[in-house]
Structure formats: structure tokens, C-alpha cells
Length: 191
Image 1 (spheres, helix red, strand yellow):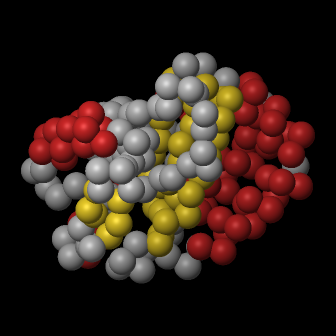
Image 2 (cartoon, one colour):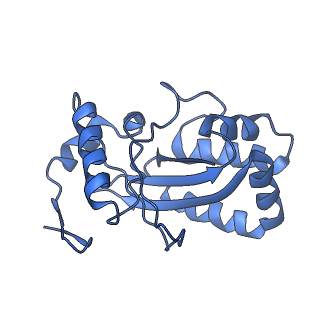
């Protein structure tokens, strides 16, 4: 089963559109489910992330039978009106035409952890842009964190290749972000 996550920037002033999209998807639940089934998705979670600089991201996590590229191709080539609407409205929301292949390929999985029992919680997602030139250091840190503290969060921070979604303007505000302290019991707090 493929698992992937990626950030999607929201065009300033379009934050309310995200809520309207969700309402429309709920109203069209049968079409929504057909769309995801046809794309091979078995789970899709979307999180709204407000950043310190005032910008907003959608952080998407999905699981299914194919890669992110396979899913995007399924949506882009689908004859289902719902999929066409979904692609159009997400272009309006983000400014990104998801019918085009992602530059540099899809997100790169760095690390993950799953409960041995297979139990799932509510989920958590986060996008943190990497400073220019720090991609390898970020990957190493995440891998070490996942190995040592895998139960803190499931480390779906696959944004190493997706940092283009986070502008350099956003990077400066993250430099001043609080640090996270991980306790031996697996809990984490911002300090």
C-alpha cells in the first residue's frame, strides 16, 4: 500500500474556499467516494495549517494502491465530472494545476512509524519548510527522530521534495518558530 503526504499552499484570500470545497464534497459524498475508489485511494486526510507568517497550507495525507503520481493521473484523466470539478477548484484554491506532473516528482518518504497493533488515532499532520541547503540534514534528523521517538508522531513530513510549496518568505518566519521538546514518554511540547 502506498502512503504519501504533501503540502498545498492556499492563495491568500482563498482560505474560505477550502471550507466551501469541503462542504461541496460532503454534499456529493457518493461522487466523492466513487472518485477516490477509481483513483485507488483507501484513506485521505486533509489538515488546515495556519503558519506564523499568516499564510495557510493544506497538508494532505493519503493511502492507496498507487503512488501520488498515479492518483493525480487518475483524477486528471477521469471522465467523472466530480474529478474535473475537484481539479479545477483546487487550482483556484492553490494556484497549482494538479493536471501537470509535480516538479521533481512526488513527495519523498523519509520516515514513519505505525503501532504494532495496527490501531489508528485521529491523525496529525504538519508541514515545516527546510532552509535552503538543509535538505540532507533535515532528512537525517527526521530519520533519527523516527527511529528513536517513533511514537511521537507518524512523521509523514514528506515535504523534503515539496518545499517549493513553501516560499522563501515563509521560511524566514519558521526560523523563529518554537522548538519542540520530546519527552521520554513520547509526548512533545513546544518550548
